[in-house]
Image 1 (cartoon, one colour):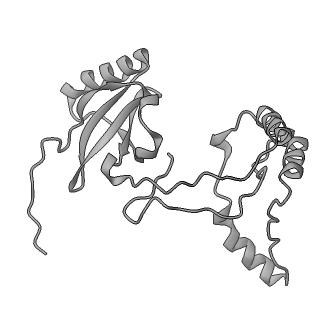
Image 2 (cartoon, one colour):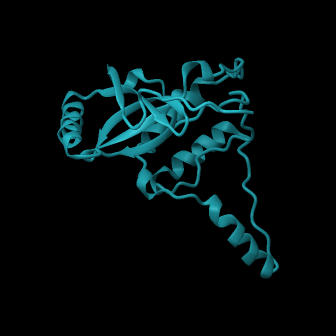
Length: 197
């Protein structure tokens, strides 16, 4: 297949289209994040102005950028005196799933206990979290060499009991998981998966 090079107007630039509240950008559209810097002396003042103005006004920009060979929507926003650019999926690339809501009944008691758990578990140090799954292969090798196996997590069966146990351990603040979902269904489609940033 032959490819035809196209010169896009947003090449090597961030073409700001307008400004919106960050809450108006659906998180399902977010794709990747990049740090953005100014190239050359003339762009430095504009960069500094945009960072300060966005921070002061509390909004984000909506822009077009060219990354590799395609034009992308993006949301530049201020962070620690710099711009971080979140690329977005085009709205037509998001495939709405079938109805994934649950018809399972929930009791008032379960809702009350869940609210208590949410209140007691408020606040997470995201900076302190790390990928525990990446350490599993090494742990498995060590366990196999010692003639042992890795313990399998036990899925929660009794929802109310799981909530009660979660409330009892909420003060621990360790990312051990409050309850377990046994199955995850990805129905975002083969082109793009809807995901959070």
